Image (cartoon, rainbow, N blue to C red; front, side):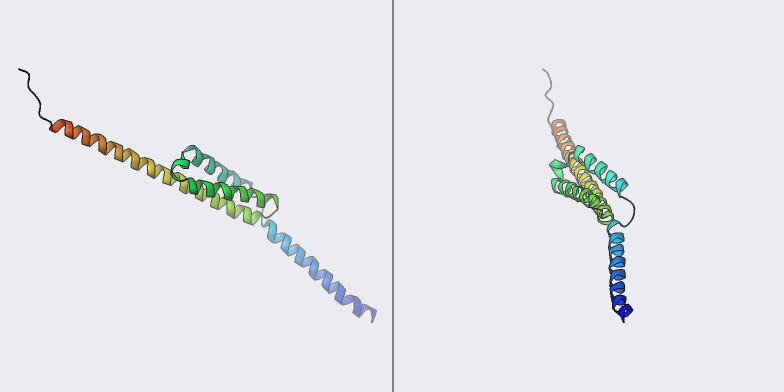
Length: 131
């Protein structure tokens, strides 16, 4: 009878042990995402240097926030979430940089058109001949 009473305790203890082991495995989910976080940081820094604050500030801020959260998740041991957030931060930073390059190209195009119109106007003016 005594072994019958201890059996449920043993089953419960074993279940708790395996549940804790499974949860611990889910938290880390692979090696530390140092590489992913480093790549995301590089992308965010590069986007910032490209002048995205003037053209795609929202996307840059989003990337910075996700990078910060990724670092926090890594410290807390949730490597899977940290890896995911770092990947998103990198993509957001790349998007911010792409939007910035597009905006700068459009500005340069507008400036070039303005210069060409000015030259055309100058060329179409009658030339006064010296007397």
